[in-house]
Amino acid sequence: MANDRTDLMQGTLELLILKTLSHDSMHGYGIAQRIHQSVDDLLKIEDGSLYPALYRMEERGWLASEWGVSENNRRAKFYKLTRAGRKHLDAERANWDRISRAVTKILQTA
Amino acid sequence: MRDLTRKLFNPTGSEAIEREVEEELRFHLELLTEQHLQHANTLAEARASALGRFGDVEQVKDECVEISKRKRPLTRALKSFLILTFLAGIFVRIFATELHVDRFGQMLIAVGVMGRLFLYVRGLKPAGFRPKSDTSSPLMLNGTAKTPASLFDADNF
Image 1 (tube, each protein chain N blue to C red):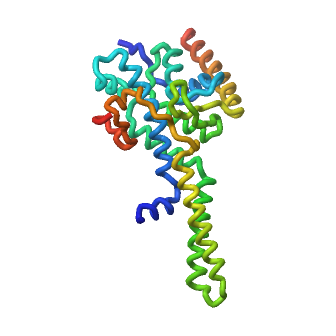
Image 2 (image 1 turned 120 degrees about the horizontal axis):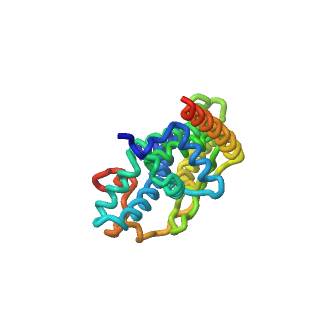
Image 3 (image 1 turned 90 degrees about the vertical axis):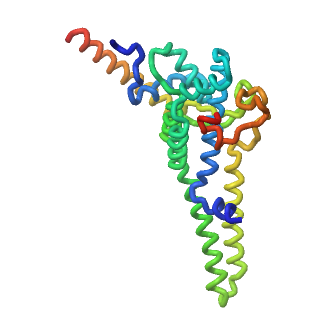
């Protein structure tokens, strides 16, 4: 029986994070919530896996972070997309579309 | 005194990095517990569900600390420079007494120690302000805020 939840492919999480942060700066919990809502529980994502990804993306210059106050008045670390991050999002998005179209085409013809 | 010496000469400031990572993960776990509390019968149940959804807290913390250490090369370089300055001061004080540069040696020692102290104190609260006291968190229902060390103990969380 096929599993109706799919484990996340490597690199996909970064794309989801970049897209989630494309409009607003958010803290880790907010990012996790937004992703869970968006994927409607179709993907299996442990919240903790976000953080190493966030730290790596910040290291690569795609994200910037700063401490601020959350909506419930607690100290929280907020992440936002940098210009390099936005460029990377555009590139990865185009890449994803290309791969997705290619795989769909193969599945339809094979 | 030994603890202070160890902190002053800690080349990567890993304790400040660890504190920052712990604070960030604690914030997430607290909100996740509050969220699960709406559907759980007990606080313990909510905490267990939150931990289940979060994954391995210790592993996440270790990975984040490791990456954080990598991405602060300038701070590491500055700390190394301050340590070298301090050691140069000691060297001057001991071996260059006949050159009458005692004051120069003292200056080097002072710059090394004060600079390292400044970086340490700055690392205690990276954003420069204290969080507001908050009693609404389910982790503080018994009135005692958990320390970062106990936060990641699954039995105590």
